[in-house]
View 1 (tube, rainbow, N blue to C red):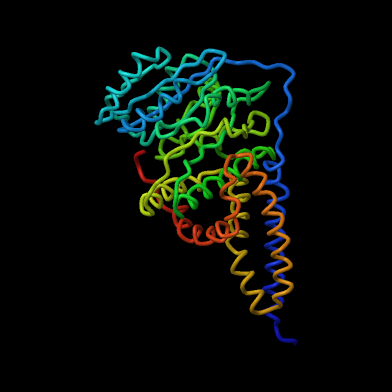
View 2 (cartoon, one colour; view 1 turned 45 degrees about the vertical axis):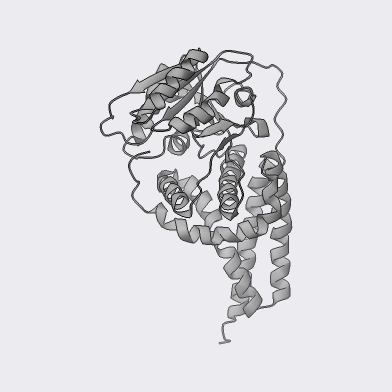
Length: 372
C-alpha cells in the first residue's frame, strides 16, 4: 500500500475550498456587484412612518434626528420616536424638536415590559402608533446619508413587495479599528443583500430596514421571538421574508451611517451580542452561511499549508483565481455602497476575517444577553 501523500490531500482540499469560495463570489456576491434596479412602469410615493426607538440617547437624538426630520420627500411622512424609559435628557430634547417639526410624534414609555427584553416592546409600540402602512426603521445613532433616504428606500416597493432591505453603514474615521468595523459591516451586507437578490433573503439590519405594517401584524409581531433578547430585525426578517416579498435598495443616497465604536472592547461586546441570534435562523440559511464561513475560515491556513507541503506555484495559481474574482466583485460592490476607500485594503481585510472568526465564533453558542 503506497504511503499517503499529505501534500496532495492538502492541496486538493485547498482547491475544493477555493472552488466553493469562487462559487459564492460568482453565484451570489456578483449579483450585488452588477445589480441594476428594474425600471418601473409607474412610480408611487406612499406615506411613510419612520420609527426610531431610543434609550438614554440624548446626544444621538440631538445629533441625528434632525437629519431624519428634514428629508426631501414628495409625499407625507411622520417620525415616531419611542423614548424607552430614558433617564437622561432625551425627553426634553424630543420636546424641543417637536416644537419645530410637526411631523415628529413622541411616545414616552415609563414602564418596563415584563418578559420582553431588548427593543421589541418599544418597537412594537412605535409600530402600533404609526399612521401609515409603510414602515421605515432606523436607530437613534444613525443619520441618513442624504435627504433622499426616504425616497430611495420607499422606491424599493412594488407589487407584492412587503420588505425592503437597506444598508446600515458606519462613518469613516481614521485608524485601523474603523476600517475593520466598516469592512465587517460591508461584508455582512454583501451577504444578506446578495442572498436576497438570489431569492434567499435571511436577515435585515434595524439601522436601515423597511416593511409593511400589515406584514408585522399578520405574523403577530415579535410574539414568536419575544423570549430571545435580540432579533427584532434579523430574526423577524428571517421568519417572514420570502423570494417574492423582499426587495433590496442599493444606492449611496439610501444608506444610513452610525458612529462606530472607538475601542476594541466595546466593539467586541457589540458583535458578540449580535451573533447570538444566528443559531435561530432557518436550517437552509444556517447551511448556506455555515458553508461560506467554513470555506473562508479554511482558505488561508490551507493556502499556507499547500505552499509549504505541496508546490507553491500551483497554490499561488489557485489563490490567484479567487484573488482576481474577489477583487473585481468587491471593487464593484464597494463602489455601489459608498465604501470605495476600503478596496485598496481588501486583501489584508479579508485575511483579518480569519482572526475575526476565531474571536467571534464562540458567540454563536453563547446565551443571548438581555437588554438593548
